[in-house]
Image (cartoon, rainbow, N blue to C red; front, top):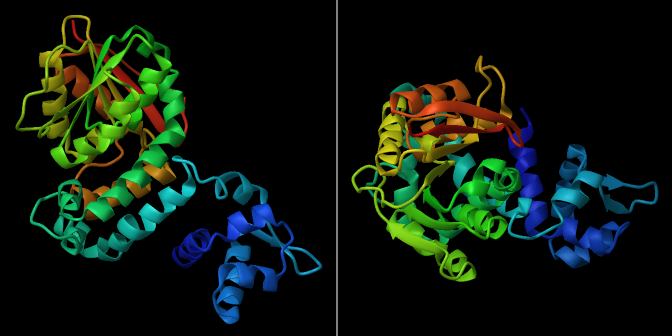
Length: 330
């Protein structure tokens, strides 16, 4: 129950580069840290106490501070998959919405969306009005996607895909990794215009193997020509009826033998387990779309069958409560 305050303390320590400084200067004293951070001594004292209580910082008998092993592994690196990006996005965009949880769930709609400019019904579209915040959001999403992406990329079923249609492919992170792993693959990234533009860097890195196609998931047709369709961290946003509709659109553009892949969080079959799945489900309903959840795999399997796919199955054991459900068009 103390986690909201302590979570924010950890993000503040990230912003002040406390973990980075201690990585370079393990055992630094309080005064050395204060000189490096440049904040009032009492403020730093309060913050260090808070972060030490999480176990992410350790203080030795001599009073010097060190990163705990978990902090050294997870909070010091600052690459594109760094937890710094993930946690900043959660703090700035995701978590403020949870103060509206009671009224949003009672109303059955995402009332916390009111904090974002615009009149569009989803966070993803409203963020187009705030490019700076949209960039923070996609850095956070991409960083967390990368945490589970290598396991997806290494899945043997992608080895025979020649043209992937990456629906809701965002900034192209997933497609770029798949293409790097599978030299014979090319990809079309389909997303709304403001997001498709973010994929320009990924497109440049992949030369001519990534094509950008902007459009609306429901009102615009999916581009033809792919032999596989990927929904990665997309379908959980929607209701079962909408998911069936999107799977049917994928079915319509695939050739016989074409496959659909659904990758994302799966709640446990009895819906009593899954920390990440629970957080995502609350975020979707309170802020992002007002519906959806991290559905159990059995739900996706049923919707695939309704959309006309067979040989439906789910691969499990992926990190962060992820699963990959696969169906084949007869």
